[in-house]
Length: 256
Ligand SMILES: Nc1ncnc2c1ncn2[C@@H]1O[C@H](COP(=O)(O)OP(=O)(O)OP(=O)(O)O)[C@@H](O)[C@H]1O
Ligand SMILES: [Mg+2]
Image (cartoon, rainbow, N blue to C red; front, side):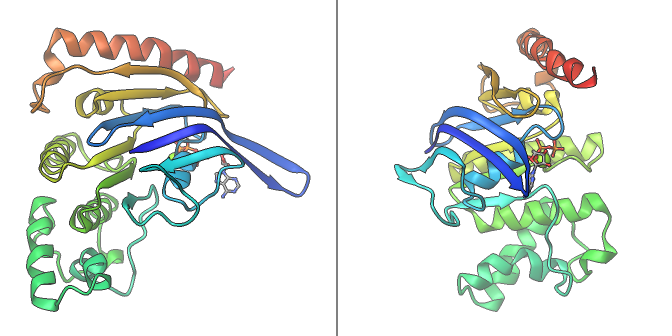
């Protein structure tokens, strides 16, 4: 579904250059759920931006379903790290915006939006505006919009970062259910290793900047997963410990 071939990205401003991503090779199969984890500022969001076609790589190629990505990739739904709700639209109209662009009529739009609003626990806030919501509520509205858009591939950049532990579990369950129902391919960036192991078929650990692949770990926990209880199994602990051992090196090197 997605292929990164020797992908690199360097940002330049005047004489200054920042190497954000270096020589990443990765192949993601249809319906796979991949979690990417790595130190802050290492280049994870840059990687998603390249898959979404917002930035062009400075080296290598991003290939989506066999074609090089050279423009905005409309086959992917992208929940960016920074929420980008339209301030002049209420929650419902923000969430339904992609359907509106697709020409879906008002009653159907409202019905479909309402269902997903309920899923993310924003009922009662349909007519509120983004500035009237908490950070976590804004994140959930972005998630709802992406889910409703129903793209074949979902890119999620720290989608659950602002949520409390209980709500995270509910959202994990929702994401896994809907991804399975819709047959979606999911690429998720997270700082939470527990979340990565709970959700993913494969966890990718990135080095500190510039991001290169430090470790790829397949997670063979059976599906459907019980997002609460899976973490108490021995297999989970083994995956968690192996990944943490590698991740710790990147965080330690970052501090010195
Ligand atoms: N548009 C841009 N112009 C210039 N530099 C950029 C741009 N986007 C990202 N960078 C730089 O690239 C590097 C990687 O940034 P990126 O946002 O990809 O990190 P990240 O891994 O997503 O970090 P975090 O976990 O904190 O979100 C950083 O040094 C950042 O300053
Ligand atoms: Mg980021």
